[in-house]
Amino acid sequence: MKNFGVLGINREMSATLAKNGIKEPTPIQVKTIPVLMKGLDVIAQAQTGTGKTLAFMLPIIEKIDANKPFIQALIVTPTRELAIQITSEAKKLVANKDIKILSAYGGQDVEGQIRKLKKDIHIVIGTPGRLLDHLRRKTINIGKVSMLVLDEADQMLHMGFLNEVEDIIRQTPRERQTMFFSATMPKGVGAMATRYMNQPVQIQVQSERIILDEIRQIVIKTTDRKKQGELCMTIDKYRPFMAIIFCRTKRRVSALNYALGEKGYNVEELHGDLSQAKRERVMKAFRKADIQLLVATDVAARGLDIEGVTHVFNYDMPQDTEGYIHRIGRTGRAGEKGVAITFATLRDDQMLNSIEKEIGMNLEKISSQQIGEKSNDDKAPSHGTGKNKKYNKIAKFSDKRRQEKSWTKDKKSGGSQKQKIQGKKRATRGRNR
Image: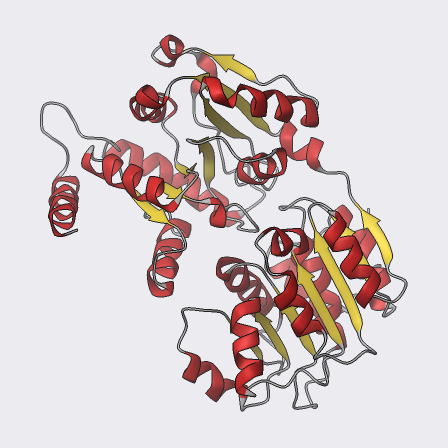
């Protein structure tokens, strides 16, 4: 059994990891950390939820010289949420060190970021747009960066950030250690690696099968007209502790969020049109399990690791197999079981067949009529196996909450007082739109 010390991580950092409940490295960490500790360039391919963040963050922290008052490591991410998450994890690791970390992403007060950049920052974690903004303003200096990470490199290309990313890379020193971390390796990533990396070591961890085996995957054949009603029936049947519901567009997210709120569900929305402050409030509440249902676009599918998500609902079919895997990967994490339910119309048949072929599985099909039927397999996955104190706490909170109130309106009473107030607020908001 390998430990972090064997990989080259010092005792103090290993103790910090242990305090955070991390004692054994994952396969991607085992393969990647020793290579990065040698200073070599790396292209690492592994699915989300496999420990990629620590795979690059641990070697970076080991190499940072806190006595040098300039940016030594730059981590570029495609989304604000991922930047926030990586920053949160990094700050836990440097809690007892004099290493300064700054996250830079859109929606934040740029003047506040500028003030912080004037101080001794060692690691910057940011999105392409905001990093370029600082570069144009000349408020950030990455001319001495010795370590560069592109996290979710395939997603950055998919989101159209190729030119922005290359502009950023060109302003870093040629003599640097470069790391690409990605779930897939499209041609664009390979071409960029050829241009900007020095004989990179290619590392691949085949983990899709492991992740998928922890998730019960169900397909409900439906129509657009029936979909919303059947979603509500499914939520009532499976009674998830926490769930993410994925929609294709921001407009569909907002419409579904409003409809579910009107029916008394504890729900919020997450998409790119929300202010950054609102997005952060929603994510904070969801992490604390103050929100049961999160209706989201695919902005939430990449990189987010949220404990307690028992179910994922694909209200709209994802655009490709990669998107499907990333969506359902929000559940069944940390060795726990999960449930992923996809609503498929006739026009989704081709994509559904493609997904089954690419993941090598036939998904479980149920009809609309079967949603109302009871089954011993329909309970929400149990959590709190003793491995993770925080997970146990969430599990106990789940049981207590279920005993105290129903997630949906009681037909006789019209719902709890809290739900009535929530409904009134939503009705007022709807009239003011």
